[in-house]
Image (tube, rainbow, N blue to C red; front, side):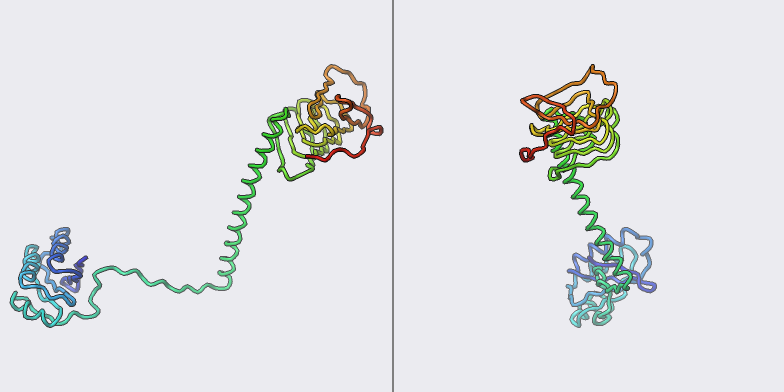
Length: 287
């Protein structure tokens, strides 16, 4: 694009195309600020271009329409005769330091970082990579938990899971009392250090061991493992399930705890015996 620039008390017009097209650019720029340019003198840098007599006259007339006087042109030696014929002073070859008609982007600067700055850049890069890995791990863990919960729910285990673990784990350790309304589900064996109060629900695909009182709902072998066991220091559940077998203690009365007890499936039904008399012979492999 042809550029119109202020230079001293006048104007410099740098032409980057055929003069006929440049006249259109110049006219548009002068029209935007006609009062500002009015009464100015202008010099035109044509570079290596040699316009015709008619093109030079057209440029002079465009400038005159906005009261701008064409004070001279610069360009190749051949331009001199054309300029003289149009009554325009010839200023000689265009200077090499004439303003470029197109803005050029600045060359990239070499920035030298200090040792501490380089260290910070490396730290930030490592932190971003670590955060990305943690985010991916959380997303994978969330997907695994959803799959586990859906799998257990499909076997009739209590819903409203409070927490579920990843499928590759085999034993889950929970410390604390489960209050009424809370639920804990897990694929594998489940160990709870604390009480399971009435109204709480726990489920596991393997064994359930409670180092405390089990008074809520418990479902061991929730994915069909009939060799699963339920062991508690005080075994008094409102409902006990092992695989597809269900036993309920609702309505029973107990005057005192009987001590640690062991529940398992014997001959197709759930049998509860004192822990000391339980059969701990090897069982089938866990799924």
